Every structure is written in structure tokens, then in C-alpha cells.
Amino acid sequence: MLGKVKEKLIRSKKKWAEEGRLLTGEVADPAVDRLPPGQRKVDQWPVLDLGIQPELTQDEMRLEIDGLVENPVTLDWQGLHALPKFSQTTDIHCVTAWSRYDNRFDGVSVASLIDLVKPTQAAQFVLFEAHDGYTTNLSRAVFEDETAMLATHWEGAPLTPDHGGPLRVVVPKKYFWKSAKWVKRITFSADDKPGFWEVRGYHNDGDPWQEERYAP
Image 1 (cartoon, rainbow, N blue to C red):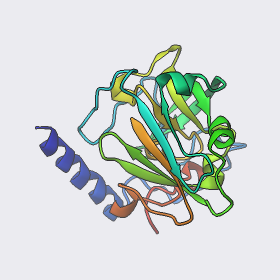
Image 2 (spheres, rainbow, N blue to C red):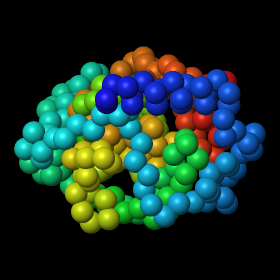
Image 3 (cartoon, one colour):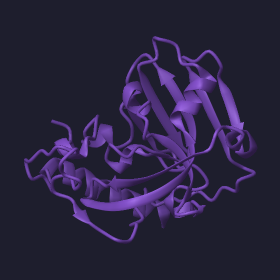
């Protein structure tokens, strides 16, 4: 059943990209417009995934950070929480046109990870791999934004499996497909490598205010 749900979803969202579904042709300035073009504000947090929700305990969690770094590491739950704590309240924007305001996330900042693994100068891109097989990509500059983080909690409670718990990426300035759930590996690379949705018609950068939903 999970496989069928997954394939149906993939076909549907690929069709959205082919048809340019939801595009308004508008752009906005995030300093002025809190809601990006074509988005609607919601109060609930919708659940979207590929039809598979890995159920990992905190004890089972492992995060590998490798590639072009001076200090590759594998962090377990205790190792992750030994890093400085980071909290923020931020908006999130999904490419399926919903936005949710004022989400409190707790976890670890990307800045702390950078200090730990020390990427080399050649590392200009970051690749993410999740426990459900999902992949996505970011430029290193975007990943190092002060708002980017690895989240373990939402609204003061541990992230549930349907929202990517026990550990997910949160990159508020991009559409939320860039914020990989159930992340298990972060690789710093000299070369970009488009991920799961990026090779299926979705934009490589994913800026909501530029309405970068789909590839040009």
C-alpha cells in the first residue's frame, strides 16, 4: 500500500510541475511581504511525505556528516545534544501553496555543525539523504544562513514521525521540500546534485518569494 501511495503522489506532483500548477507569475520582497506569492495561510501543519514514515527512536538516530570536511562525524542523540542549543520562531512555506506562521523549533544551529565539521573551501554545495530514501540539495551559502537548523522539537514537544522526527532539517527561507525529514546524512560537496523533487521538475533553488516552484 505504501508503495502505491508513493507512486501516485509522485505522478501527481510531477504533473503539477509539468502544468505549472499554482504559479501566479508574481514575485515579492520578504522584507515587505510576509506571505509569498500564491501562498495561503493555514493554522494546522499539513503532513506531506512520499508515503513512508520511518519510525526511529532517539536511541536509533544517527547523523553522518561527511564529504569535503576536515572532521567528518557521526552523531548519535547524545552527541547531537552536546552541541549548543538553538531555538527560533519562524514561518514555513510549502510548495503546495500553504504557509504556517510562527513555528517554534528547537534543536541545533547549522553554525554549530559548521564549527564542528569544518567544511573545506571547495565545499560549495550540501546534499541531504533521509531514512525514507529522499534526497535534496542546497548551496552551502543557503545552508549557512543564520535561520537554518536541525530541529528535534516543535512547539516545545519532540518532533513526531509524521513531521520528520526525531531529526529534520529546517531552512525557513526556502520551500519546505528543501527541509529534509528524517535526515541521516549531510554531505558537503564541490558539485551540486539535484535531489528527489529537483530531478522531477521542481526548481533547484526553491525561493518562495521568487515563486521558484518549478524548473524554468
